[in-house]
Length: 263
Image (cartoon, rainbow, N blue to C red; front, side, top):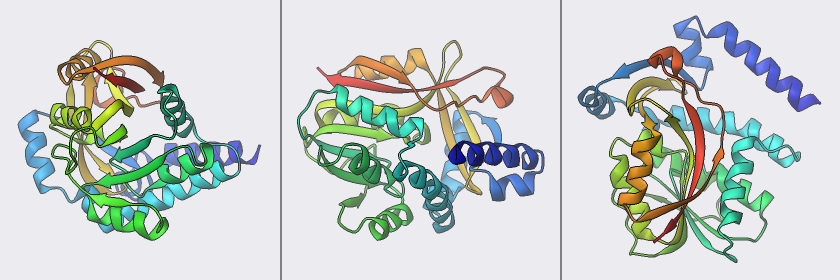
């Protein structure tokens, strides 16, 4: 009961600060959405500190600290549960798993808590600030700095590659999908991906944990075509956390986790 009350209190605070730009950047995980062209998105990403900022790494760690407290108490958030479902659905016994876009490494703890001893985890992120934070929090777990569009691993290096809530932050998402498929031996999971059912792929500027970033909300049709072009067959999708950008785009979006098999 207490976690439910706390979550409702957080939602109330979010509604109160949302109309005030200075406050919402300081308090909310996401704020200030604005639609961009692709060229504008490229320029904004080149100029933004975004996920490479130590401040954003610290704020993300603090935000997920609360979620990890709930996880340890036996009430994991939906996105943790869905990631476990996707990995279990591969049917693989003790697979090796690479998480691309591991952030502060919190999914390493989620897997250890919800699937103890079930897989060998490696985390990768292109932000050295995030990787430093992950290494400090989980010193026994391997974390690597790397680029999702140019992974430093040979073909078929991991049984599963999981793009962990990172695809939406990669402008060359087709390249990231191809690299995930190349490095995976068996399956690829694209976790918590925001999509439109009936609208084009759209690029957005926003503040994440107070830092400027660029993200992508996908045409689901285009996303699935990118999976197929990379040699991936969609096996299943699960509804993930609510993620609706209609206020910025005029079109409703949803978030899904996709499990693909390498063909």
